[in-house]
Image (cartoon, rainbow, N blue to C red; front, side, top):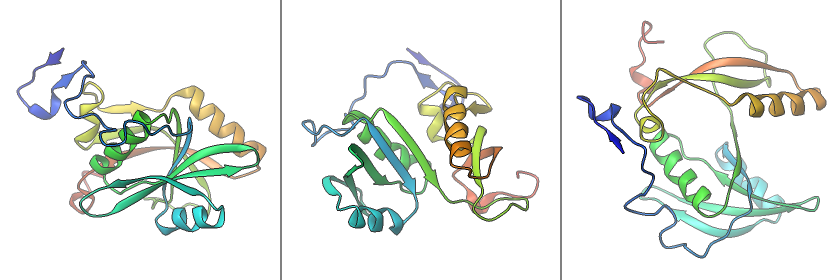
Length: 185
C-alpha cells in the first residue's frame, strides 16, 4: 500500500509487485545462493579469470555490461559480480542477482575516509545516513539505516579469526559526491 507524501522521494509502497521484473529476459537463470558483490573495478574480472570462473549471464546496461560469474572454489560455488558505482545502478543489478537466486550477498570494496586510518584496515558500517534517493524505494523514510547486528557479528568474527584489523564506522550514502559541502559532511 502506498504511503503518499508531499515530496515524492518520501513516498513508499509496501507492495513489492513490480511492473518490470528484475530478471526479465533471464527468467530461467538460477544463480548460487552465495554472492560476492564487489566495488573493486577490474579486480573482479581479474579474479574471475584466475579462478577460471564461468559467465552465467551478462547484465546489460546502457553504459557497460556486467558479467555475472560462477566461481567454484574449495568445494563451494558462489556468484561473483562487479558492482556499479551509484545507488540506482548498484540496486538495479543487485535486484537482478536476488531475483535469480542469490540470497546471501556480501558487498565489499575500497573507500576513502575523512579521518586518518591505517592502510588496509577493514571498515564495518554499523549504520549509514540515507542521503540518496534509491534507498527510499526499498524502505520507509528514515534518517539512518542500521546494518543487521547478526551480520555485523559474523563479519567481525571472520575478521578476528583471520587476525585482520577492523573498526566499526558510521557512513553515509550519497548520489551527489561532489556536492558534499563541509557542513553537509
